[in-house]
Length: 243
Ligand code: GLP
Image 1: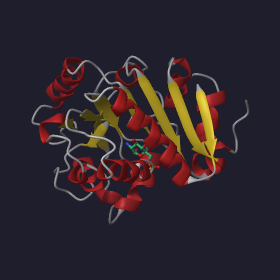
Image 2: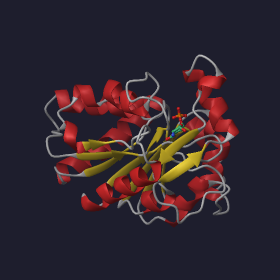
Image 3: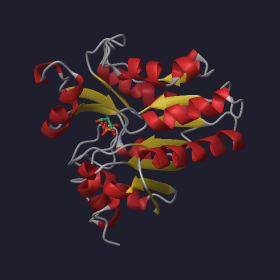
Image 4: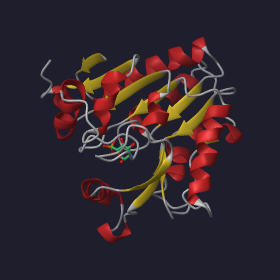
């Protein structure tokens, strides 16, 4: 694991953007794995800046998002489809047919999982995947006790995740309790991974991920086994790392 400790959220976002820009310059038809949550918003802002300055082109880039809530219409203001539109896609020239998010409103959820996994496979796999981390160590929506062998699948959200995500909804009853998520195996098959974390509330999860036992109880700990992972954390999120 390559661990980079930075001062704050802005520096984390800038560093991550540089790695993405490098990836796109190196391979203009890169397949990117994208994430939602508050963590990657700064990264997306930086990428939009690079795009507007003419330094990168998304014309041939393909993207796959990690996850989506079940039974939330893509137009719902908290759907991840809408999040991606508002925070990135509307500002760049990635072709609509090239950005993918699992459908949370598919008629057959199991078939949707298979379809999504196959799409990633047919695109040649993911070159660079961005990840955030939940306070319980989840990545995507792979909650504690997930099987490391899981591919894209339907998940029940953990109580802590539901509570954490309640801040985006009017009340806790509105927070979806289920989602569709790339599995740990899907994520581990990415050729490169960048995980971002900021803030002291992530410090325990980050410490467990980089220096704790590799265990499904802390899903992100599996990243210790990946040959090409960069963790970019601010000082607060890095404060409990014990190397
Ligand atoms: C959700 C997403 C994750 C994200 C996590 C942390 O559960 N499915 O991909 O990493 O939230 O969110 P935040 O970045 O807002 O702390």
